[in-house]
Amino acid sequence: MQSNASIVVQNQMKRELQQTADGSHTLFIPEMDEHYHSVNGAVQESRHVFIEAGLHHQAKKDITVFEIGFGTGLNAFLTLLDAEENNRSVNYYSIELYPLGAELVRALNYGDVICPEKKEWFEALHVATWNEAVRITDRFTLHKIQGDSNHCELPEEIDLVYFDAFAPDKQPEMWSQEIFDKLYAHMAEGGILTTYCAKGVVRRMMQKAGYSVERIPGPPGKREMLRAIKSSL
Image (spheres, rainbow, N blue to C red):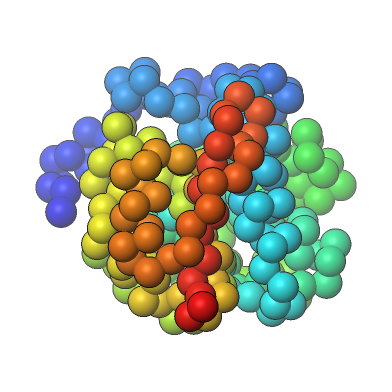
């Protein structure tokens, strides 16, 4: 578990706003040499990894989503828009240890780039109270959890996991056998986990947890990614 001192240091790290190849923003942390989203296109990456490879492969109409890393709120916003467009009911849980400040959130351009007429939904995701269930629309309920995914209680019967932690070499504590075992235990049969990471060590941890794992084409700038499925077959 991280100490209070390390949490303060992480919260005080500088985050720089940068524009990516598709015109949407990402954040860069110089101290970690790490981006929140791909410089090859933040929105493109999130759509490819989490919406197309994850959400669109989950056949259930009413689903529970668990996201590791709320971050900029981009994955939640894209999921909300997709749920409204396709008449799906989504119970969305997202955990974040270091929430962004309001000023930085206001600078992000996702509302304008993705869906200007619904940009108030993006704002609503960020102003929603932490650690409470907040109904954003009739089809989308948000549960933002401020905490550490290694130690928090997970929802039951998770249908879809967006594993969007920083890269294993930047945040190794987030990529452990323990967390994949824990996620597997809390997922519904047929549940799907997607991540941009394609490292062999990550794939083997998923397989050890019980998942059926496949390498699939990655987003622009990345050759492969992983999709894991909880199945009794």
